[in-house]
Image 1 (cartoon, rainbow, N blue to C red):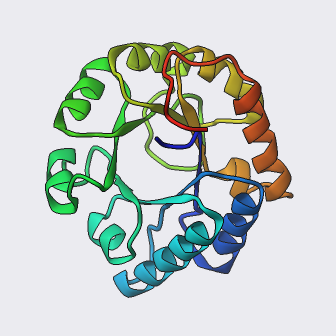
Image 2 (image 1 turned 180 degrees about the vertical axis):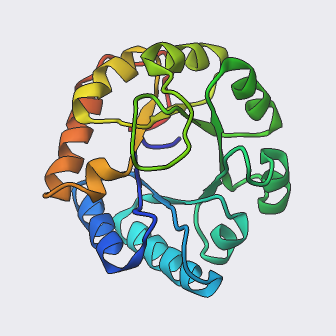
Length: 214
């Protein structure tokens, strides 16, 4: 029950990031992930609350990256955690059964462990090379995404260097959907960029996973 396109906010936050969120939601993005790396907790909470409000008005879901405390305080729909964040099972225990919990994996063993710990979906990558985040491991490509998708029964969301042109290969590999940062936030026209990604997802070969929304 999670959408296929996850638009991740620019980590710098602020008005430009909110403008990109508005544009993506206006274009039909079903999920927004709040990613903030700077500022006080109060400022980060205020930003998350604004994004949650925009998502509610648009009928979209909002997930907060890394911080389950901010997710709960902002009344977001879920939390997405990475390898260095609180474990999935701890986030689940804190947030409860109704909270959407995502984990990060790049290989089948890690993916299976996260699902066993209670992850509702997985962010998998980097699928391709990307400059959005420093210190990332080597890209796993569609083949790596396929290996993870074959190992779990939850939606796999491919992330890292994703463009509309690369969506068909990722969907054919078994990805339920994709997550993007600069493909929307860095686009000259975020509305058009979001629509292009949604069109690619709608027109791509269906993955092996079904029943998880659009």
